[in-house]
Length: 60
Image 1 (cartoon, one colour):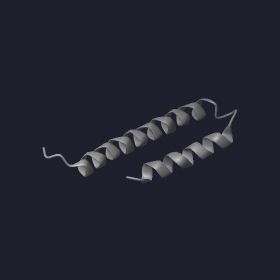
Image 2: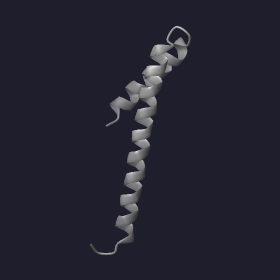
Image 3: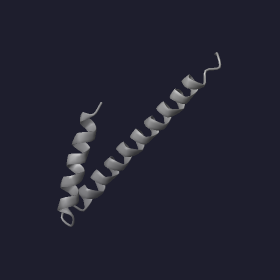
Image 4: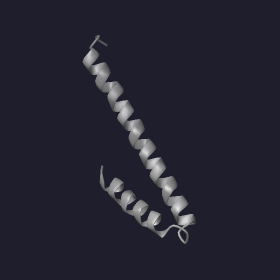
């Protein structure tokens, strides 16, 4: 490989973005499970998490 700092920076940024997206999806899934368990206690949290989950699933 040739030494291209631009390509290295793009590679690092893409890895960071991928990790952030994976963390967001894991957090949203865990919130969905938590809100499903405590749906009777926190109905507004359940509704907000469900709408956020639908929005995040629509984004490719």
